[in-house]
Length: 66
Image 1 (tube, rainbow, N blue to C red):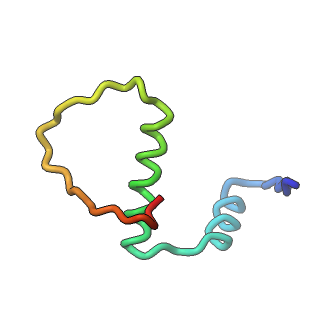
Image 2: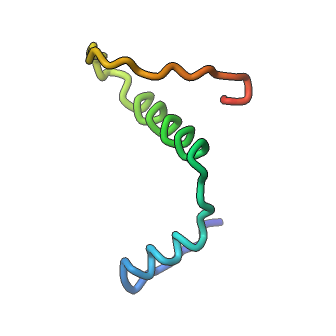
């Protein structure tokens, strides 16, 4: 079941959201960001890859990364 929350102002929404979410450390934040980038890329597979000549960091993956 969904909980419907109606906010009076955007400030109240931001306060409630910041209080309800846990802070991420640097590692977890990076992993979450990379996962979101992969997710967004998967939503738009027609996007053509461009060689941008950037030396990207290649992170090792484990079975638990799925």
